[in-house]
Length: 456
Image 1: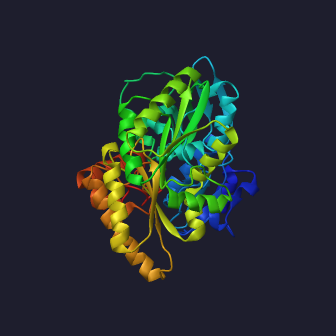
Image 2: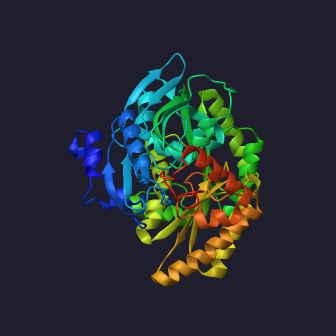
Image 3: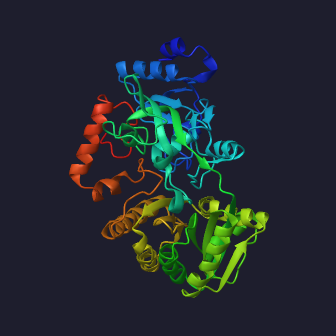
């Protein structure tokens, strides 16, 4: 294999066939570790194409990866194949201010890209919690994030893709046109496919004008139930928040301890954290309406975070919650999504399940779009106890989510971790059709085989 890869990539430093670091064989959690015969770092579409052609002809599995922030095992290699690390394909090729688009390579880091376009008065709205994720990774999982309630998810901002299929052929789908009914939406099939259909090598992204201002507001409640129930009223009042997050006080405490920061409104038992953006007059009007709406739901305090440093600290606490839980104990992070009118029902169910099953569960998330993040905490359980108890409670949780009209994942993807539960709750006909699409893209199943919806 080494000799063949050397003929494609002339720089030997970009090929590893021995002593491959563990981080390239796992995901961000590092618990599931695979094995690989080679790790390669391509820097062009042409190199990706030649590597895949070689792998396809020789039936060698390929695992694409970006920044390595995945949480569900989608980047864990199998069967001693090739790990295709796209992190060096990290260039912003173009920002076209006339068409409000940007063309980037897949290894560009989300946070860096957002800063780059905002310096030019433009805005890229998708805002998942992990800001150091790559754009290619965001597209591969159709990442959502905190601003989805107003602006939508990654799919809504991907206008075109250049991809390489498993056999090495290069395909361009979509482009800079704002409308397209010209045949099947191949681009949208690739988005969210977790590297199972093709390898992304270029992305054309939609931009919008940067909002004039942005103000966050923290609302305190004496119970999580009151906070969750107010979300429906906020949306019905049409005050157009950019983000609506819910967090319990006990969860905030973990974030405070982890970052050594103090969170405002310490007397509250639960919080809604909202952001409003746009013109100042519009923001002021929406915040005034917010006071009235949450007052009807029993809010104990409404605090506009006008101090930029305080606002940044509050959002840092929100953004670090999974890591804060992980610092206390191993945990299983979930990102279940339910209809927005079922959020309070689902969270109440989780709180009762925690009491009856005696397994700690910490919930927070995107209240505005029904995306509930759950951390199921291991505590002092042995490996055997943890495996059994976790499986038992996951069966119950996913079953309840589907009963409420929900789904297994809102933004992390299926990967390896959720596959069993996804298969259990998804109709067989749906799975068979997904695998027929896989066959059409990758007949030999070399790309991320056995990941997500793909039967290994």
